[in-house]
Image (cartoon, rainbow, N blue to C red; front, side, top):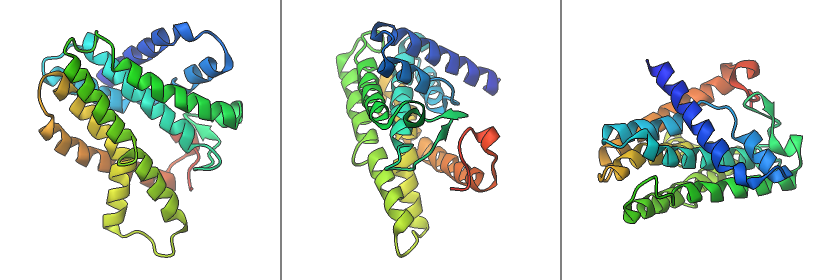
Length: 234
């Protein structure tokens, strides 16, 4: 049941991403955006759709928030893979954007995907109440920005060359920013759409985000690139 629903959510998000990018045409940036947005588990989108269902919001509305967070997540992966960041050449089992195209294209693709995320949250189909849409925009900006995902990436880069390794508290804080912030937003989004502040969902998602990153870190040591779709042992 869970696997079926996860696959169904992934398919719905892919269809929405494909549709929303139709007007972009077929120039290299648009093609690289489509390339980037294919594949992945779509866990964040799944959390949006399921938290929305818990609060009585239909998929036809919440799909726009689910698509928004997947676009934001895709942007973060493209930029994280750049030589100045993690310098990865493999993502989701395929060449990273800066390898398949070039670094300039990768930067622009990430910028465009971030903009697309916020555009999706302005859709009337998402929520007729503009204040709810604005709340989601504000929360996503915080989750993705200098107090959330971007901060976590900076902390991760700094930790790699730090004289003293991070302790458990420092690692937990880093992971809650780099990975947990978007996962928390995803779980809260459905509650916001349903007229709730999402506090209970935040507590749940905080624990889930930490568990997700712990599993990912273990796979980096014990996993197989053919199965994970990315380089391991880094």
